[in-house]
Amino acid sequence: MKHRTLRGVAALTLGASLLLAGCASGDGGSEDENSPSPSASDAAASAPEDVAALESVTVTGDPGSEPTLEFETPFEVSGPVAISLGEGDGDPIETGKQITMHTAAYSGADGSKLGSTWEADTPEQLVLDDTLYPQLLDVLEGTNVGTRFLFASPSPDQATGETVTYLTVAEVTGVQDAPVTPDPADVPDRAEGEAVTPAEGLPVVTLDDSGKPSIEIPEGYEAPSELVVQPLIKGSGPEVTADQTVIAHYTGWKLDGEQFDSSWDRGEPATFPLNGVVAGWSQGLTGQTVGSQVLLVIPPELGYGASEGHELQNETLVFVVDILAAY
Image 1 (cartoon, rainbow, N blue to C red):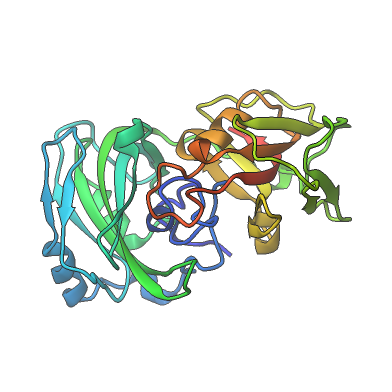
Image 2 (image 1 turned 180 degrees about the horizontal axis):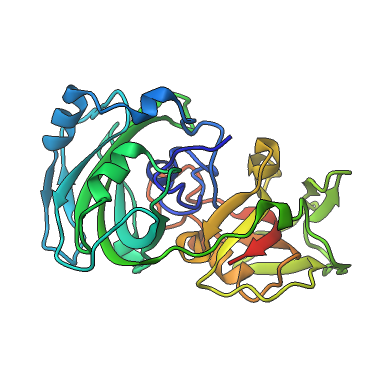
């Protein structure tokens, strides 16, 4: 089932505001069963009271720099809503194109900032197609590079299950032709290639008949201070580059063995740009070959360490990632 998200932007970025509760945010990249699925109501105009609520948000800051949001809490809307903050004066933005944009996300519950791509200078990529909320397409189509917009939508909080409104402010920094995506029929269901013997002492990965992984954390295993990248299967495809979008199956666990996210459980792989995920994914998957399966052990500073208040902020994360395609 196709989910409507802000992109769906890859999961390991700013968490719930961008992914609408994807991938434990989170942020290996993906859409989540809690994300709103398409329905007839998606195409309807936003409720006037929701538009008024978003218009009440004060946005300050010069173009080209991160703006600041001020709003009363709790901030709530009944459905997805977007408003334009200016048309921009750069190249025109059209449906079917891919844009780059800087974003900052806030929780409507307490006003806390969940993350910002301005801080790390890692803009998001977004293809303007029918996977987006129509409200978002409405405020982007026909504008120009440099345009800013506000987007808000309610979504379940992963920690409490309660519905929270998340706000995102964004500025479009570029536009280009959208990449040609692989034919789904050409994307395998699991990693395929030559088995690699892992180093001793790492979390032990076991695959079921479908290829879904499970792990066993060795007794006494200590959290590493640096990123651990261990190929488990070496694929025969091309090397993944840092500017590509990846289609992958993955499962993520905390270091105590508790699973927090899995594309396998959702029944479909995730798609995400490598420049829009946490550094542990970007660094760990760049240079790997398509078809590979990779074990990642990510210290907090390369995961959600900078995401104040994120439920995984202080966690060492373990992922098993099957790289199915890259483009």
